[in-house]
Image (cartoon, rainbow over all chains, first blue to last red; front, side):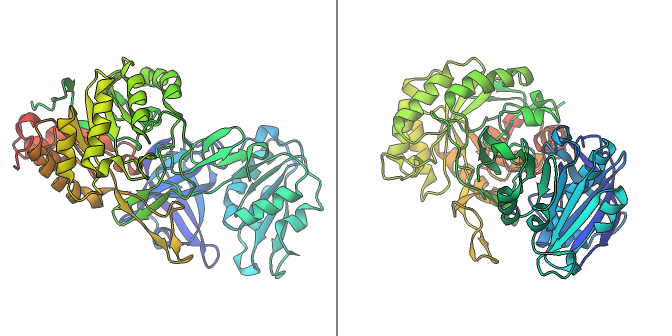
Length: 243
Length: 303
């Protein structure tokens, strides 16, 4: 974990409500895909936890959806402004267990952490399939970016306006895969849990206080004992999750 | 040179800054970021006789200049605190620590305190009496002077280390409760615990927190805390530890002027994990700015 000041390099809208923000600064604390950052915003008491979409030696890319006052404030920030950010939070995804042909499933704002994970798995020589789920065509983002990495990409929309009509599970049930990784809303997780045929990892979301394990605000029970979503999570293995 | 050293119930503190229970875990998350030996001490996560998972989530809600939490005293239980947490803590913190204790019966308070009292690492016992009494219809020990006195007496009978009773502000007369604790043998008083609060989610039209209500903390409650520390410290002859919304070195000085011998910092740690280190670093400079040579000279200075 590092607390530092980051400079906004880019902050642009990808869809009506989803924005891409690129931050420049110390990324040394990021060690795995699926970790998150916690951003201090002027006038807000608690920081805003946002998952990391991608990172390199000097930049962090965040894709965030405007869902409340904090993210609304972020959407209005401009290039050159600075943010106080806690970086390198959470455990992230473990790619060691993926097998040769893992499937990545992202639903809505659960899509971003899949990107750096996809990059890492491809780099490790794995053949990656990605399923992106959205409500409707206008909400789709990052389909081309995943394709550009070299993954096989499937898109599902609930209203059928693009790709497969239905949910990510309507695509998933027809695929062959060795392992799964997913991030998205709870109803999607429950549907995945009844569809998947392999082991895998779920990335969970919870209201957090500190984001680094001090306040116990985001605890959950697992088959392996109590865990803090912000510290021992947000990624939990399928075998340990209590639904 | 200024003097920041104070004495809390017979134990010297290099400075009066103490991270408050529940905002600092058992220290190691923070030891990753800075050397926590710069602290006066810290009050560790509220410990109960039995392990507790606490309340369902969501446990956290944001407020203007503050937050509400309803964690529900999640902790591994006193046995594991002694066998696992304290040995780990010994590696990163070399000063006496403040053991924060909660309970749901008089016997549970006494037994938890008795066990922690045997630990060399523990300097003080801070007894949180804001919990409901399961044998008393769920009413909090801390809302009734007689009940507060019974807990204090029971803990004092089985311990040798200084006992600091941590008071709830959710009462009609906090002075009466403080006095009852002093008469029952308390060595110190700490206040204030969180204020009972609620936020409602406009989208779902229900309370944000699963437990509905929770403890409101953060800079918004600072004036309430200063007022109560001022009142209590005038009424008792034992040291008072002030807390509630403290987030800067100026706040520490204000709390001491109100009558605090030492000052706990809570919610600020969750927002800025280095808050206490920053306050400690700023303290000598701010003391000079206000012409203060020795913090001991200003305790209760506003009375």
